[in-house]
Every structure is written in structure tokens, then in C-alpha cells.
Image 1 (cartoon, helix red, strand yellow):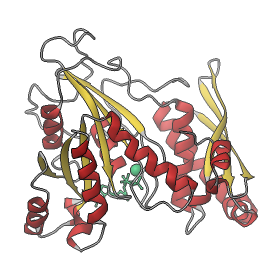
Image 2 (image 1 turned 90 degrees about the vertical axis):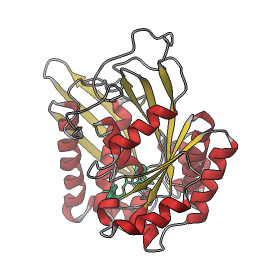
Image 3 (image 1 turned 120 degrees about the vertical axis):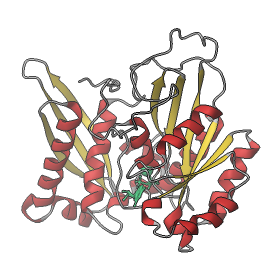
Length: 339
Ligand SMILES: Nc1nc2c(ncn2[C@@H]2O[C@H](COP(=O)(O)OP(=O)(O)OP(=O)(O)O)[C@@H](O)[C@H]2O)c(=O)[nH]1
Ligand SMILES: [Mg+2]
């Protein structure tokens, strides 16, 4: 429990996915770190970007691969706004996963920022996992052009491309996946998965390990992410806002943690955060009748953070109006988004 980056826990979190009993030597689970940080023979490592359209399940996949909830997930598109890094250390080496905002056509500063975050990740990547919503693609939804463009960018940068056909649990006739598998056949691998249920995720992990070059561990074996607890707390609160608001309100909201105090004597954590909105009417919506919605957001955030930190957490929220913050670089900086 610390304001520093959360550490890896040997037993995994409550979302730890179930691996079969026949895990091979290349299983990614377990706290084992490589013997030496100096790239011993056969030690592989690399940066793996999770890319794709909004709402395809990139963050669900990050959490599934990590066995711990690092990224917020909601049914709304454009949930993720910043790149999030997750470190998986195993006997074979180290995978550094980069979850990214969904790529879409930007229409204001916030969206520009999000798409920039996603595309910039390719510059650091050894492997790109293009996550495709297979259920949507089969119904002719999605944007194949944007996906093809991402694949082309990966190719131009010499990044291995793995295509991950996600949400197969929502595809009843699996034969319908065949044309999609065929369409992406130029990729190094095409792996049907359900990030939600875990199906196919071991196969994906094997493909990732097999695509990595030899290299050193970039992070300590017990490191889980480069993000601070303060940042993860702000995201957790934003997730609760996203889950409880509609239309433009979630997209006009940002959360900044002003105070994060670990009270050693009491064994608890006190978090004070600001919820930014763009208009007075939005402030009224977030506060709710008699303060009911902000209270609900506070309680749900407290519960999620207590579970993550495994200690009592107190959450104090305030709503602040920052007119049109999402439309200018200066506004973005004021609420905490900076390249
Ligand atoms: N049925 C099904 N739903 C899934 C699966 N993976 C993710 N979802 C759901 O899809 C929605 C979006 O998931 P996210 O993980 O937030 O998607 P994302 O690609 O990170 O979205 P952005 O951050 O907005 O780009 C959520 O409601 C998830 O529960 C899956 O394998 N099957
Ligand atoms: Mg996401």
C-alpha cells in the first residue's frame, strides 16, 4: 500500500485468470524474475502495444493478461485516455504491455491527445496486438479502414503484428470467424479470444512470448505498472463517473487526486479528489439530487479502492467547473493531461 506504483503480488489479484494445470515452461504466471537484469542467454523482453478501435476490449485484455485490474473498463467507447503500462515478469523474460486509448477520428483537444497517445505507443513497441471486436465485425460494424491503417503503421515500423479477434463469446456461430481470420492472414498470428472470459488468452500469451526478441528486463520483477496509486485512484473514480452518467457528461469529466495520504497509525488511506466538468449543468448532474449521485460515486470508488489496496479507504470528492477544458491544450493541462 503506497502512493508509489503498486507491486506485483505472487498470488495475483481477484481477477486472476485460471490457467490450466498443464502450464508449460513459458507460462507468464508467477512472480519469478529473471536471474539477472543483464539479459542472460535466452531471456526475452519487449514492449507490446494493445491497439484498436474504442470499446473492443483492450483494457479488459490488459487486466486479464495481468491478472489484476490496472485499467478501467466501461461499456462506453473512449474510456481509456492515457497509455497504461503493465509489467509481466516470468521465467522466460518480461513482457511490457501498453494499453492505449481507442483510435478514432478526433474532434477536440482531448480526442487529439488520446489518439496521439495510442499512435505514439507504436514507436516504442516490439509487438502490436491489434484487438478487433469480432462480434461487431461479423455484424458489419466497426471500422476496418482504421484497423487496416494501424496494421500498416505497425508494418512500416517493423513491429510484429498479432491480431486478436476478441469477444468470441458473443459469436454463436464460430464458422463466422473464418472470413475474419482469412482477412487478417498476413499478420504473424490471428488469435480468437474472449478477454472477458479468458478463452484463447493462453494461446495469445504464447504468441507474444514467441514474438519477443532477446533482451533484458526493463523493470524490477515485482513492478506491476509505472502508474502511481494516485493516478490509479483518479482513474477508479473516473470509471464510476463513466458508469453513472450519459451522453456528453462522461466525456466532459476529468478527475484529479489532490491529496493521497496513507495514515500509518490507522492503517488506512485518505483520498481527496476533484471531478472537473465543463458546464454548470454538468456539475448539477454529477452532484445529483440532494448530492445523491456524488455520494454514490464516492461509495463505489471507496469500495473498489479498498479492495485494490486491501485496507480501508476514505474518498472525499468535489466538483469543479473548468469551462471547455477538453477543447484546449491549456485546459487539458489544468485537469492533468499532458503529453
Ligand atoms: N462479450 C464480451 N465483452 C467484452 C469482452 N472484452 C471486453 N468486453 C466488453 O467491452 C466493453 C469495452 O471494454 P474495454 O476493455 O473498456 O474496451 P477498450 O478497447 O479498452 O475501450 P476504450 O478504452 O474505450 O478504447 C466492456 O463493456 C467490456 O466488458 C469479451 O471478450 N466479450
Ligand atoms: Mg480501454
